[in-house]
Structures are given as structure tokens and as C-alpha cells.
Length: 588
Ligand code: OXD
Ligand code: MN
Image (tube, rainbow, N blue to C red; front, side, top):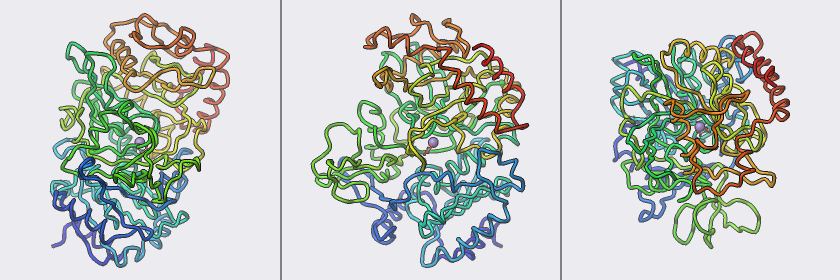
């Protein structure tokens, strides 16, 4: 008799009408087979899906070029579907579930004709974790199947868990005809279901990532008392060998991956990586917050990755690991058959093909790699991988960091006064937009907890959920805000960033352990200069002061802007947020 899973797959196949159905098992042989199919058989836009790169320098690595219109998340075509619009909130596009399904059924009808449907049974979280979830994604592109095999844990264990639980998270994906007007990413949180059509881009098509692990999981977290967040998880080892675990939330393309695997500029400190994008956090039996990374890979931004900014990522990308490594929309050095992007070490090679495969001429002023070009690589390739990465319980979190890209106003680091005050600081976070989503780049938008594009329900309820969880914890993590991007009067970044960020992390863990005092300001506690290790940095006194400056006049407009943002949520905005708002306002 057909199982629940087989019946569901059959139903989807009846709708999408593939030529064949292929059940993925996660094996190494299968990876080779899918890559071969992508090189020799499947086409997107008439082009092969994969190009084999120089295997001596980049072992097991392949280049993928997407359709030129399909290069980033499409937030305007991403919907959450509840019976009522209020539950989705002003932070989401909403559609009635029945209406959405009727529209999507038409788009899915026969969309896999002549193609293979790949069935990917996978786990988010290590298979033996009580917090892990079993899922299945169907897709009609080898690129997506291979990417899912890198980013999640694909294998028979997921099928076993599904038959034990009698339940799984369902995802149906088709690249469709890539028409940007027929590109929809539909979430049905009440049914643990995602339907995505018309895009092969990671955040739209790898349904375990943003769609399930953030949008749907955030909703499950609300119902079940936990948090699904857009956060790095990392351990900071001090010179005594003690490791303190922290999380850090930052909007897309603001340096989370670099932070998660940073090479410390301070001797004696070492960073251990657990995750670079998503954290699922539960209150443990000890009353602390424990985090797991549901993913198993990195889907990181290539431009700007170099031996200076992230040497550990270059080591990760060049490692000959069990899983293939993919580059998407980078440029190609046509002499050496190696990937290339802006911000890589050294000058641009003489002969480059741009991200669309055309001969690149630097003089046109166009970038050779797409600004949102990416790599997809297994976390198990990382030399900084924490030995706790697969611990089913996760790691206990002592501090949480929230950071945005702000060229002015926000100090390098400050600590909130308590949990509620910290939730408010994170909720009023703003950031200048990047190329990770299709929109105007460099515009300030409020991005609470870096979750604006990913919170799968009304953010008013989300803030209340955060406040409630704080009350349930015996020892909640301390909350900090950071900003690596403050500029001087000439428009240069003041803080060197990257490996030097360890100096800020050191202050954060010193504070979390109660080792140092700070200076109170109306927004929280900033470091006293003497408590920061600034040895060997070349920042003049005026700029150093600017880094930690909290100037009354500058904040007036910010406070007004925050009020407008909070007001959108009407009655759903918890009173605690307004209490914090009023305290801040009255302090100015
Ligand atoms: C990502 C994103 O890909 O946030 O992680 O866009
Ligand atoms: Mn992200």
C-alpha cells in the first residue's frame, strides 16, 4: 500500500505531469549523476545547467548561470496565505489560500512535461535532534536538487522519520517558464506547505531555507514556543580556551558569513562556526536558550570574499569535500577556467566572461560577477566547523547580536539594558538595502531582527512572542546591537571590520560574563574606550569618538521614523514596545 508520502508525490505528479520521477538518496554517486545531467542534458535558457570548473584548483566545483532575470529573492512575489489577512500582517503579502491555490494550480498544471521530477526527502537539523523537522521537496531542476543536497540533509533517514511521525513539511517547486510575471512563492503555514514556481534562485527555490526554516518555522515557533531566526550561530574561544556561544542577526548580504567564520585578528581568540544564516532556538531544561542550525551548507555572497575578508571561506570553497561546490552567476576566468568576482584577491584577470557568459570589458564599468552572485558549499568543508555543530541539543546562547548597515547614527556596539529593551532595539533596527533582493539598493528600511522579509506572520505578534519567551527564560541571552558600517566625514568606513570585529566580540563576551563596565546612554551601554582592545588599529581619536557617539539631535528623526513603523501594526503591537518607545523618546 502506498505511504502518505508516496500518495502525496503521486498527486503532485498528476498535476505537474513529469516524464519521470527520481527519488534522491543523498549518496555521492547520485551527486555525480545529477551534475552530469546538468552538464549534458538539462538546459535553462538554452544553456547547460553546470559548467565544470578547473578541478585542480577548485575540486568538485561547478559554475551555474541563471536566467538573467532570476538573480535574487523576489519579495514582491512572495506571499503567506492564511484565511485572514491580519495574521499575515503588514509585513507580508497576503492571499487567501484557496485563491492562491487556484492560481498556482494553473501554473503548475503540466509544468514538468518532458522533465524529471526530483523527490528530495530531507531533514532540517541533524536527524537525531528533537528540534529537527522532516521535509520533502519536489523540483524539476538538477541545480535545485544538488543545492538542496548541499544545504540540507537528504537521505532515507528523512523517510523513516516521516513514516514514524506521520507528518512532513511539503514543498513543490518548478522553474516554470521563468516569466518574471509568473514567479510566485506561496506559503501555506497552516498546512506546512510551500509552492514555488518560476524561479531557480536559492531563496525562492531551495524551499528548506527561507520558505520553511524561516517563514513557516517562525509560525511553528509562535505556536510551539520557540524561535526561528535569521541568525549566525558561532562559538568564541578565548585565550583560556573557554568557548562562549552567541548568535548574530543581520540583513542579507551584510557580512553574516564573514562573521560566522572570521579569522581573529586578536591572538588567542578563535571562532567556531555552527551556522551562517538561520538559528532555531528553544528554551532548554536549564532555562537557557539553545540554538541549532537547521541547515548543512552555506549559500553565501561571492563578491567581496577574499583572503583578507574571509580566508576560511576560500579554504572551504577549495576543499575537495563529499559534496560538490556550486558557484552561481560569478564571472569566469576563461584562461584558467576559474570563478572570479569583484573583491577577490588581485587584479581582474585579462580574459573574463561575465556572469552571463559574455566577454567582459572592464571599461564598460559593469561588474563582471553579478553583485548577488553566490557560492553553495557544504558546512562540513569549513575548517572552522564547531565540534558541536551536530549536537542534537544545540549550544547555549549567552549573547545575541543585531546589526544593520548604517552609514551614520548607530554606534559600533551597544548593549541593551534588559530583555524587553533589547527586543525593542532589535525591533527598530534599520538597514540600507543590498542586492540580495530585487529592489533599489542602498535605501534605508526598517528590518526588525533582520526578519522583515522572513517573518511568516504579523510582526506585532512576533514582538509579543519575543517578549513572552524572555519571561520564560531563567537566563536570557544579553542583547547587543552592532554597526560595522559607520562612515567618517569623507564617506570612508571608520571601522576596519572583518577579522578586527573580534575586538567587538571580545567586549560583548566580557560584558556577558560581567567582566567590564560601560557607559550608559539613552539607547543602552556603550564601551568605555579603555575596555576595548584597540591596540594596533589606525583610527584617529575624533573618528574613534564618532564610532561610539550617541548624539541627541541626530536621533530625533530616527525616533519619528520608528514611530511610523511601529504604528503600522495597530493593536497587534504589544504595549511593551510602546513603553520602550516612550522611554527612549522621553530620554531625548
Ligand atoms: C540569503 C538571504 O540568501 O538572506 O541568505 O538572502
Ligand atoms: Mn539570509
